[in-house]
Amino acid sequence: MAADKAYSSKANRAYLRRRRITAVIPEKADQQANRKNKGSAGGRPVSFDPVRYTRRNTVERCFQKIKTWRGLATRYDKSPENYEAGLHLRAAIMWLKTLTPTT
Image (cartoon, rainbow, N blue to C red; front, top):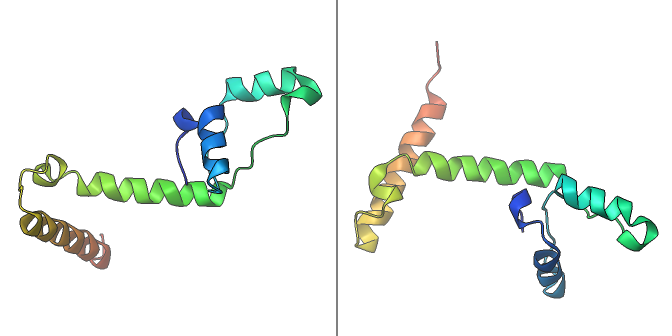
């Protein structure tokens, strides 16, 4: 699971560890300082994979582009078929924009 620094709590990490889910969450600066101040009792640093975290950012940006359409962001179309059609239309427009050369 990849998340922002806001979810970098001891409780969240313990929950994920119990469920054997690999966490890709950067450690907050204050948490890192507290851990270092405790010395050997502070435990080892959290594992963090910056490549996987970058991929999370890419996915998040994609969702933000989808949400620029007000109808999709607010779920204006209540029927699942219309909402899905809007998602497909937005995805097609995003894909077409990658094909056209910018000058």
